[in-house]
Image (cartoon, rainbow, N blue to C red):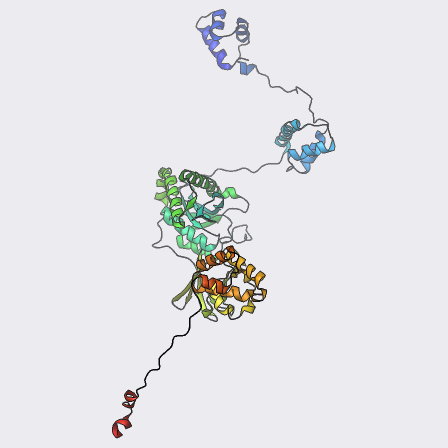
Length: 494
């Protein structure tokens, strides 16, 4: 079959006066082919007639009415499912290689009779009009800090016109993480857009109201009002409405993965080093968007004079169990605070406890709900005086700071069951009084040598032997003359 270009070249040769034989030789055709196309006066594409007949028998002709009935009943059925049902109903009638034939038939039926599909409408982005943001989990990248797995998220913001992005490391999707991330990203970008769109985060969006519009939380509205941005959120289940940041998640994480491969290591000395690595990567990615960002920058509104530093604040009384309950999670505090009212300032990663104007304590915040963080240092001073409370303490598992301490308790149970609780609590007391790492090391050495990690053995290994004999104090001479001089009657009658 000749192509249109070959026949066009043939026609050009004939117009130049070449004979059929010469034109055929120049174009690499036979004289018969030259005569054929000259007589028809058409190009090859104009001579092609669409085929309307089948070249072979349809192998699914017998069962096709059944397939159509299934598709009309439920168009979500996959062709593989229908093919498997046919093979099950008629063993030996169909071969695996015929699946592609059935897929073509089903596709043709869907084109002719299928349901209408959802249409996507490309949007025209205006400089400085909208920013989109969302959280993305980074755990798949395998980043470690000092050899320890670093489980974290990134709050990611993107300007929809220029695709300039900003990020902040965080550990939950709480409102504090949202507000701190939004502020940090706006200050990295250097301006405020008119609109801010987020996913259906519980920290920002409540259920839909009667008109089908999003109902935002009071805290989130206050945050948007402070920056003068109009809030919006995508429809639940329609991630494409937040498509700029969703696509940026994928490309950003792919860029981080490639940068880590070039770096040759996924381990960082500390969190600060990792965050600097991310910000440098974002800076280099934004350089390629500098031209469109100039239009964005000109349309962005100025930032406030200072960040809002938004946080939630609660006034709580420390229970007699030396616990406080903050946002459905329990935290232990030093027992000296029992019965005291404290002001708790909740941030994305920490809780700050204040009594009056004095800062009392800072605790790492727990992610999730109905969790607990019990620090044995807050309770051990009472537990060593009440060792019987340890056996049924509802948070007992929290009093094993490491696996080594858990193994030590199991070894004590095996050696001296009646004294195991008391001895273990004394080990914890020893760790709280000095260095937990040193006590853990000594316990591990004792068990490795086949010994029992008792309190006395651990204290001796640490060089803290029992106190020696009490020092002998010499009896001092008592002179009352200086005392007598203070008595007025003594001075008068002496």
